[in-house]
Image (cartoon, rainbow, N blue to C red; front, side, top):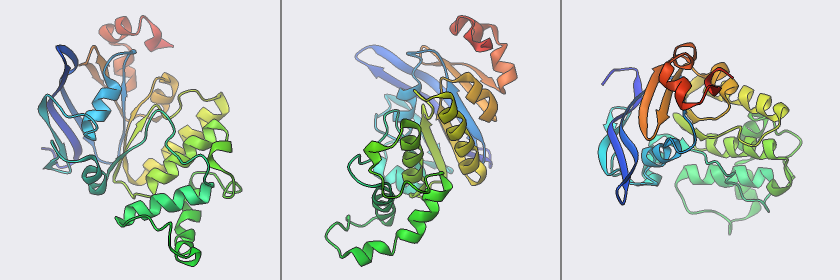
Length: 251
């Protein structure tokens, strides 16, 4: 494996009762880059994410992270190694405040049981780090707001804060700008750019303008297989990619 490759798959395949959702995917993500995984609906992108973090078990193939094979590892163990993902649906506690959500994520990083029973002053020790994360994702002023009351784009920013609380070396972002207004897309895109400054990001994203702006490298999936790979200018002109997107690759 190349020294600058942080995540690599070899022949990654997932079958569901005869249906092949992901087929022989060879993926190499370089450390310190933003790598996008794109493709039309049903291409196998989210299934691939679930395989990388072992929310699904591969039918065959291998996954290596930081030079170590993680095929067969438990999702919690993979997260502790530094490979952490977000989801298409925001995964925060809606009735808890923004600060409380981030503090819970910080407890999870410690690897101990959650400290709901402990005195408030014990949890207050986490406030400085929580405040720093809240500032990093642009949520200053929302600390006392219940997560469920946040606008959609702000809620996704909170999810990124809780992901950052685990101090990942590599973040997997699943549709980070899905369903957002133009203003929110710009805000989250800028946030991804900032958090990627000292870590690696692999993202599934449908918004091709976001992909073009942020990505160092792009892998295109179609029907579960790698169709093309390279920089945006290369893959957007690839005839098979244009056909798979029915022309939207130039949108």
